[in-house]
Length: 176
Image (cartoon, rainbow, N blue to C red; front, side):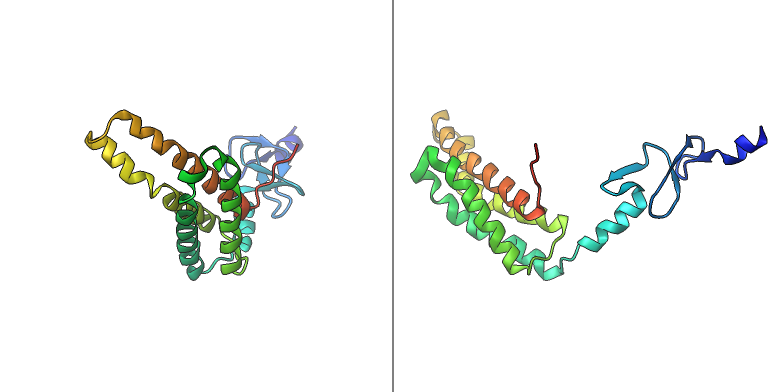
């Protein structure tokens, strides 16, 4: 009976939980809530975090490029919104793709999740820039509520561009 007690593993992070799992990298015992399923097996969160740091290669100048390039290109793209109306559903993802490729080229294909968020946020700022004065006018009550319809197309454009930029830069893949 003492043999069974000595062979029982307990999670390194939760000492009261019995487990049979071990991290396939550092061999630390982990419970199911601490285990992260990877293509090569289960790993502890510390090993996954350490592995992710290898892929974050962005330099400080990359964040500057990831802010200014999208904000300018997205603003230029938003100038089309009033002219194309419904076709913004087709044009906005293309604009997002162009912005993402411009950022990727400017940063030398270096990557970092915060950099992807900066680029998507800057795209959103550039896209909604023309709608801010319209919202301000509506909030002041200078114009009637029908002016808010002028905010709908820029909002759709902004959502499509920002999500396209983020998904293109981060490499999100939709699989069936």
